[in-house]
Amino acid sequence: MEEIKKGRIIKGIAGFYYVHVPHDGVYECKAKGIFRKDGRKPLVGDDVELKCLDVDKMLGNITALLPRKSELIRPSVANIDQALIVFAIIKPAPNFNLLDRFLIMMQSQGLSCTICFNKSDIADEKEIEEIKQAYEACGNQVLFVSAREEIGLEEVRNAIAGKTTAVAGPSGVGKSSLINKLCGCEMMQTGEISEKIGRGKHTTRHTELFAAEQIGDETYLMDTPGFSSLMVFLEDKSDLCKYYPEFDDYEVNCKFQGCSHISEPVCGIKDALAEGKISRLRYENYKLLYEELKAQKKY
Image 1 (cartoon, one colour):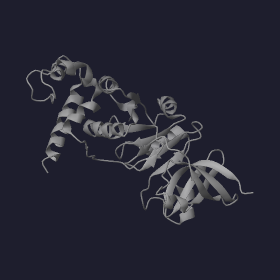
Image 2 (cartoon, helix red, strand yellow):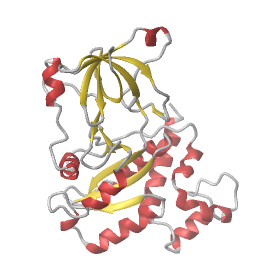
Image 3 (tube, rainbow, N blue to C red):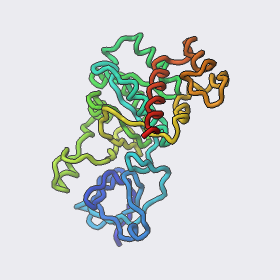
Image 4 (cartoon, rainbow, N blue to C red):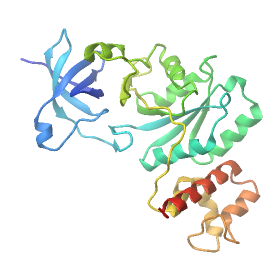
């Protein structure tokens, strides 16, 4: 009798799905045609059942898609629990406007975010404290680490253990180095799968999960491409406030309903800003994004 196993799709390419079975390995699988008939497509992150066809060669067929607890649109992936947004705190200096865009993108898809600043061993303590206050005030866990010096890595491991985490951030911030240090091995490579499909490791960029069993059972990391820019798309510019939760306590003091918190004469947000209760860094990013969304509606 053919053995049935449960696992998670970590990569899909050219009609093949690569399914990680905990404490077993990665099976190369085809999906049954019945999924196409039902209009269902397996996604990276899907929990599945597979029928083993060849245990030695680790080949199988996906026979069932298990219920999804979440599904993201960008990137197209299932069952992500949270996002780990990685920036360098220095060399290069963080682009906080881009960071806010990442936060909005992840939060708009229902993901909680942990912000991880790398290279903290060469950063100024005062700057670290200012950034920490600004971004903890909007409800995020903020961690400062050094992948090179292996500082603060245990906090990050605790934050991602037992969860499926999308790792995002711009290029050149040490994202891959950090993940490799966290896992104690070279996670950011796809040699085994590349050999099977006969392609180079970096010729095409695909959504992929990495099973981080070194950190804990059911721990997966999703690598995402590095971004140098990111557009924000919201139905209405007035929705932008939802992604600045530190504004919530002060909006009650705004005179006008639907206050934009930019040009109105009596504004609780601007008063709080003047009193140092709201981060000027975050507020300036809010203004830039608001104007960008306003301009989008004109075209």
